[in-house]
Image 1 (cartoon, helix red, strand yellow):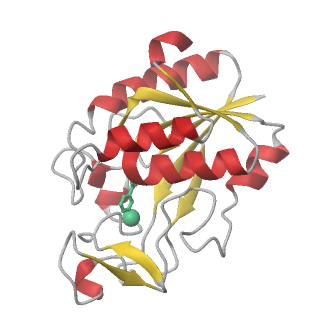
Image 2 (image 1 turned 90 degrees about the vertical axis):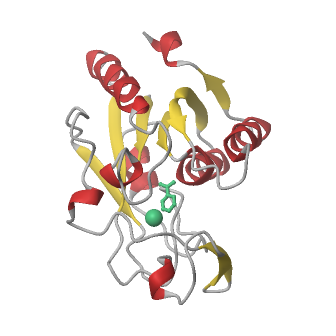
Length: 205
Ligand code: VGL
Ligand code: ZN
């Protein structure tokens, strides 16, 4: 069985959001098209939410660092971010134009470690419910899209592959942060080299 995984389609990653991804809004239309296709075929749909307590240590202000600076958090290399996707605040809500999605998985709730992947935290210590939800629904094939290509999409896809899923990444459904030029291109290449299949949303309609 297949599932659509919608990664972090939240206000803070879209236009005027706290951690705005350039052209992030453009993927909402793609997500809605995919939701319609997957619903029509009775396929599983799950959305992820970056869901930080306001004290989260990945926020530059909580770690005595500057936005965009690279340091360490809990022994792991960490980019320090602006305050974003705070639990229950407007910035963490789904983009207002996104069609409703019933299944939601939350990540980034432990203040001491960031969590780009929707499966594990960055230290691979704690697992979210995502893998067990997918297995309980007999899902072995994932179609992944969302924000941001070079962080949460990439790490979700790499973990999905290592967990044994067949993974398609919907190219036009992803946009990246691109702190360094070409980060998104590199992320697509890395996902592909690891076994993901890159497709366009048109191929699914
Ligand atoms: C993300 C940076 C920090 C993402 C989340 O969703 O890609 N990026 N938190
Ligand atoms: Zn975050």
